[in-house]
Image (cartoon, rainbow, N blue to C red; front, side):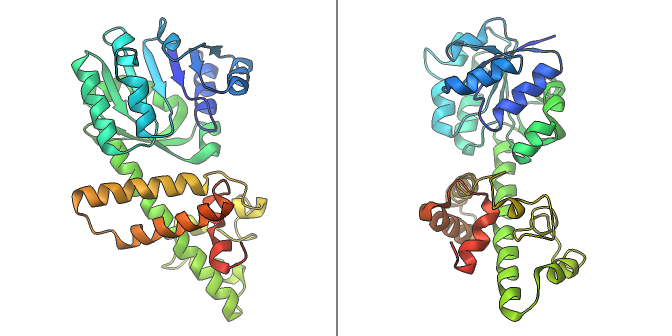
Length: 296
């Protein structure tokens, strides 16, 4: 049994931490929400009273935080995790943040004698609950090897993408593909409606033809063809539009910084921005089909 610290027990972090508890580890968790901490304790975790309290006896610390500013605030500085932890502590940051921040924190960890990987995830809340997430990992080989047994408890696919920050690079590139493809699939269904082609017929054709993609066959944005998709639950979020917009903006920041041409990524970011600012930020990102249809 390993003592694991876990900071950020929200929609994704909570189920991830719970799976570590189920695997027999002692998990000390912290979150700003008292209700979330109470839920974590009911799942068998140990509720910590502050961020640094998770370090007590922990050989591994996992963070799942909203943005790069939060990650740097938690890790860096005299009161940060890196200054307070014992040398040799393994840190796993599963937040989705900008590549530059990930590399700044990883460099500080290395200089402090710590092991660290950036390991953002894909798979949504369902994947977090089922322990079937995909982890995209950046960091040294030895840190990856040390972290892999814990990642395998929380996920099914673990890919080492290279040096520090490369996990974040893979995540934002993947989600740029996802955002663009969801808009493309949604536009196709909207056009099909206008042309008198019903959704099931389009699905039956495109799901076995050259239009096949994950946004169509697994997460179809219209009710009916894929019973498990959020479209059949009034777009109750598995992955919110706000989270998609955040990732698309990260991709655009990286594109600007590197001089990469991503015109479709830029347009997808702009469309999700309008959708979110119209009051749909907390709906599932596939609900953008309603925006494209013009019905909210």
